[in-house]
Amino acid sequence: MTSTHTTASVLDRRSTKVMITAVFTALALATNYALIGIPNVKIMDTLVFIAAFFYGLRLGIGVATSIWLVYGFVNPNGVDSFLMLSFLMVGECFYALAGVALRKSFVARDVVRGTKEYQRLSIVFGLVGLLSTFAYDALTNFGSWIFRTGSLYQDFVFGNMIGAPFSVTHEASNVVFFATVAPAIVDAAARLGLRTSQDVA
Image 1 (cartoon, rainbow, N blue to C red):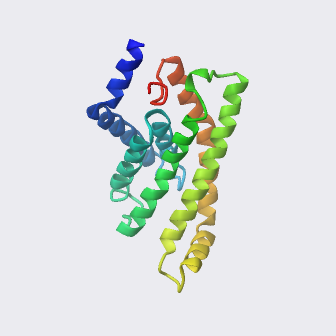
Image 2 (cartoon, rainbow, N blue to C red):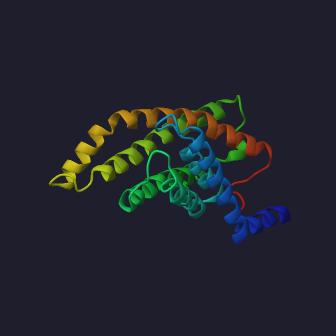
Image 3 (cartoon, helix red, strand yellow):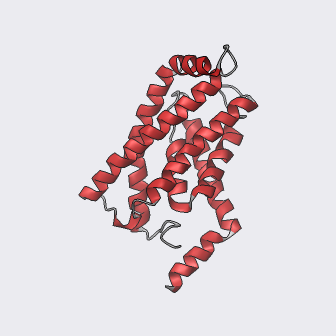
C-alpha cells in the first residue's frame, strides 16, 4: 500500500510530468526525423497513445502538442501554417484520447506476451490505431484544404479525396505500429512493474 501511494505521489509531481513529457516528445521527434524519407510513416502517434495510456489524458495531450510545436516549425518537408498546425495538434490529441479510453478497459499487468489476452490486446490496439488515424487524417486533410472552395463541405470532400493516398499509407503503418509496438511496450512495462495512473489512483 505504501509503495502504491509513493508511486502515485511521484507521478503527481509537476517535475516528473514535465520530464516524462520531454522524454516522449524527444523520442517522437527523433523517430520522426529518422523516418523523414518515408512519408506518413511515423511512430509518433503510437508514442502519444502510450503516453496517455500510462500517464493520463493531460500528459498525453501535452506530448501531442509539444511534438507539433517543434515538428511543425522544424520540418525538412516544410513549415506548417498556424491554421494547419492547429488542425495537426487537435488531430494528434485523438491518439491521447484513444490511449485513455483503452486504459480504462485493460489492465497492463494482466497482459503477458504469448497469451490469448496479449494477442487480443494486439488486435484491439491495431483497430484503435486504425480508427484514430482515420479520424486524424479526415480532420487534417480537411484542414489542408479549408477555405479553398465555396463551402466547408467541399473543402472536406476535396481535401480527403486528394489526401487519400497519403491517408492509406498513414493508416496502414499505424495499424502495424499499434498492433506490435504498443502491446510490446505495455508488456515490457508490466514486467518491470510500471503501473498506469489508473492503477495507482
